[in-house]
Image (cartoon, rainbow, N blue to C red; front, top):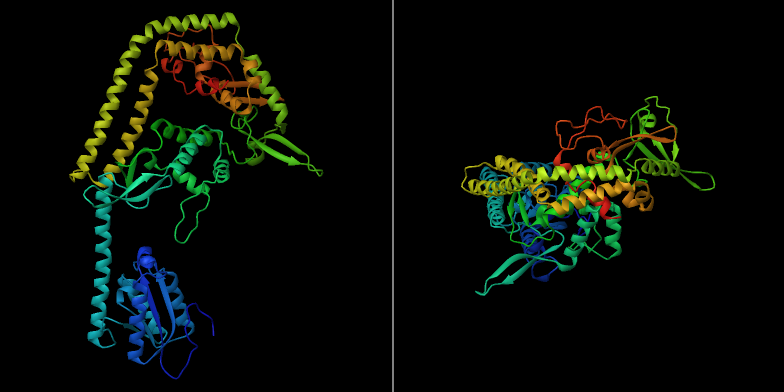
Length: 558
């Protein structure tokens, strides 16, 4: 005989045999009162054994699903019971009520067919179901009632959760960094709410900050949190354990930490306190996008030049490869990904990493501007600022007005949805649109609020970087070198063991071009790929002079 869990006695053919099936829907029911099985499971077991005595049958096995919904037949002990019946047929399957077995008519039919194929009959302790026409009718009615109850309960639960989300509450378990608590009001009522978990909230802030810095990978963050002893909250079946990378990714994409609640794809203002701010939140997708655009995979051979150096022969990105000789000595090389993966016939040979580092550093020295060039550019830009600042003040007012309008749109959209005037799919689409436009408007507002002193300071930092390019780059650690390369260059093109050319970021291309009229926006340069050539006169795009995203992060670290 094949052994099965929960088998009670050895099989005997002297009297009919039966198995019993017990189930409760929730973990709370299974653990109520501090008992191992709560209260419902023992009560069901007692009723089933009484029914077995009335029938004069021997119960040979029992199967218990504690905390499993009957809306699906994919329950561990139910499936074990069906396998048991196929191997060891019995005369009866005893349940407390039909809805313990299934709350779905399709599942009910399939389970009963499986029982009948095994030569058994379904027996309910509280319902008179049998093989007679009236018994089969009652079975069908009870099965339909069970399905109606399940679907109606799910619908009522959904409505309650939706209303809770609309009022700013948290439907379901609070995410990492928060905890579900019960508090007693002044009126004596017990209320379930969410509060910040101080220890884990600090870990969430550090996690966002670390990833937004661009210096930490997912695996490094995971290892650091584990080293700090940060654990997820324990659950009944799972002990406290370190965060996995998948959990970290969910944290980084969960707007709950901004003070918002999301239910069925719709976002609502939450009553819980935010752990992070909007600015930090926006930096995370920027890092993700930057890594995706550069093709950088930081967990595999990280290097500060990855994503910045390209093949000057075929135009493909250079990857990095590590090889070891028989003695275990390590050699790092940059290779053309087009030659290796696309088989495009490129002839660029593998270049030692230290050679590429040296050639890039030499190129930085070659782009340095003379003091007279820096003075000429500074004078031209200062003259331009005298004309541009009045327009900038008007841009500040316009950006603030757009932010206010979008905030009003968002509030009115929610109110219209509450009133039934906006369907759910349209609400989701409009919320996504408003969120994107609002983030962009706030970023513009942040940039346009810079004062003249800040503009001049930013200009001075950029020009100082170009005047002392070689020394600044040579003195910087790898993390800062990465930021400098990404801020100043779009691409560095290597061929013949040298940096042959570069595509400059547009701001630095303009600043380096002393001879162009910075006040003429119609004469904007067009950079040729793999060449630092500008066939048209350069102009000035005013936001480029003040948008700190290009050179601020890099120069601030020097």
